[in-house]
Length: 101
Image 1 (tube, rainbow, N blue to C red):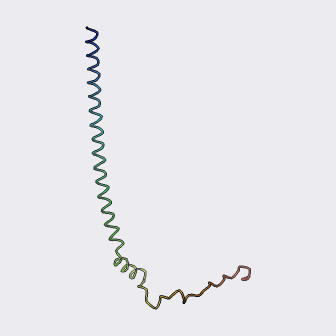
Image 2 (image 1 turned 180 degrees about the vertical axis):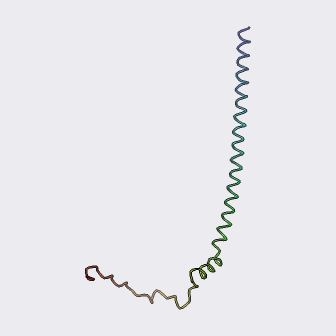
Image 3 (image 1 turned 90 degrees about the horizontal axis):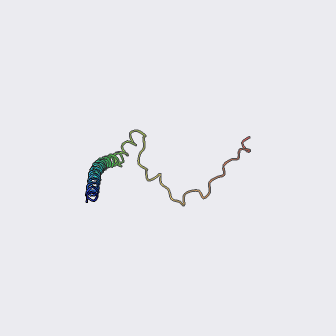
């Protein structure tokens, strides 16, 4: 009987220690998960801010005003447009380097 009792006590102690260690491992993993969840939320917020900035920076009215002010660009006038029929049919050949000498 003493051998069986001793084996049972050792086995129970081993299982108790294993459960104790497993419990703390699970708590560590839960803390890591919580930290990752907070990081994901922060990244999503950053993405929303960047998308708002992108929308502002690519606003057509803003870009048009900047192009006119900084580059002197203006909208295309109707007389600058042409049809395919009005374009030359063939691009002239480029002069050879031999011919220029």
